Image (tube, helix red, strand yellow):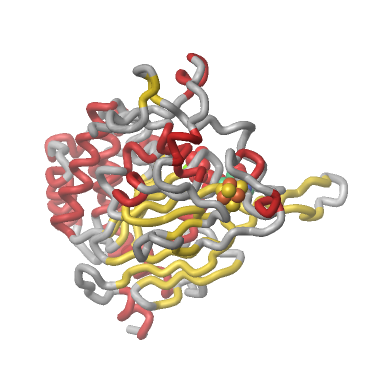
Length: 371
Ligand SMILES: Nc1ncnc2c1ncn2[C@@H]1O[C@H](COP(=O)(O)OP(=O)(O)OP(=O)(O)O)[C@@H](O)[C@H]1O
Ligand code: SF4
Ligand SMILES: [Mg+2]
């Protein structure tokens, strides 16, 4: 066994540094010119992201559609090669691993997707689908595998009696339990949940989140939990990273981000969440209304990428990119990329007008928010 394999399979303890992402970028080439078929431009899906994660932690990653959340997830799971930057897992650089050394990594980092149905072969029985990880990565006999799968099914709240059912015979919530069972099978260290409850009914969302939390405690799992908005991740995350156009614009402990967000974009995301103790105007929630659409990641704005939509933008914002840094008065670990961070109480002032009914209808669903 090589040193690399030993390191990736090493036991970890709660609080150990598990993952370090350093200045990682992923550019997808775009072929604009069909005649010459030359890569002339690129989509900067992830553009200089750094983060770290300790064993047993949950990092929530939030941001609008297309900001690079799934691409970041796929880079960490080594499903895409990085364009630049480094990723270390258990202290071992994984961006340069060859195929053979990738095997232990594939066991250690698993993903749960929004639509488990899309990744479950409809013609195979669930027992057979859940046997795959054992067949690929272990030497178990068929009988041992069957026992493991039945165990796994009951652990995620599925009846082992349903071993021979097809995916279509399960409800949406049960199918997500199958997706979670598949991810859990080989006892990974890190599970990246990419919008795991976005497609589910509100009542089912809470059940799946409870299951993920129970499994985290039982198996000392570390999670990256991706979602569109901040409402669903609040209850599961220890820390949050807010992404905008391929970059992390703010990160910090979850309650710190909720109570004292400093980036205008985070403030706008939070103001779209109807939480009882947040600003209300004449009985309606006050929202920061962003102007314009999200710009293209193929041609991101200069300086601060948020400047065309930012209610606080000044001249410097379009020329100088703000670094992600700790602002005066903020605790260690709360980092913001903004030249003019939001001050206490100012978020309410940013909510300069009430939303129209049409804007209200477009507000992100705050499903699952209990506060
Ligand atoms: N394989 C690919 N080839 C080319 N472009 C891609 C590829 N995957 C993602 N992109 C582009 O990269 C950007 C980021 O996409 P990504 O799927 O990571 O965003 P996301 O934050 O997960 O969005 P959503 O919330 O809709 O899932 C988008 O502009 C997307 O079109
Ligand atoms: S740097 Fe300027 S444009 Fe960017 S978020 Fe801060 S105030 Fe807004
Ligand atoms: Mg995505």
